[in-house]
Length: 148
Image (tube, rainbow, N blue to C red; front, side, top):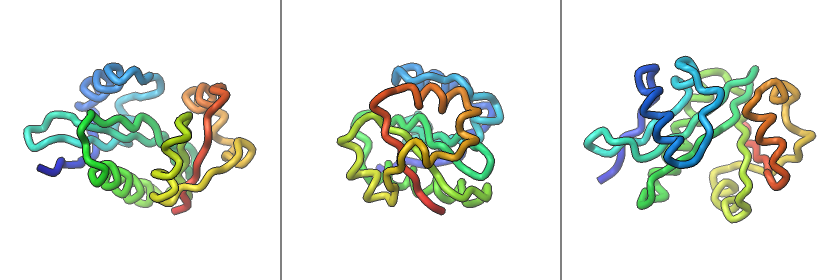
């Protein structure tokens, strides 16, 4: 049965953090306000099955914390990205960026419309974010951009 995607609320912060920690992802930089820039994929019983977040910096969004439980169908993951694009547009974003260190994911992200960019092409405002500075220090990180 298909899942339900909804925008997270401040009240979801602890559940979101627990979900990310179980996936061995960091939660630094996620405040009550930031939680509202996360989408939650829930099953019909309201159990969290996946998430995708966006860190807003100036007129750009940096996607983070894509986590889905095993068994999620590709269609639900694609809908999660489509809903994030709608959220970004509603916030007046110009572009979305993401980082990955898994080269096998490139065809999937390319199918969604993301294109590889060099680090030098990242907005200078990104260097103010602790989370993004951490990602920049991972040697094998690739950066991708989606123009809105």
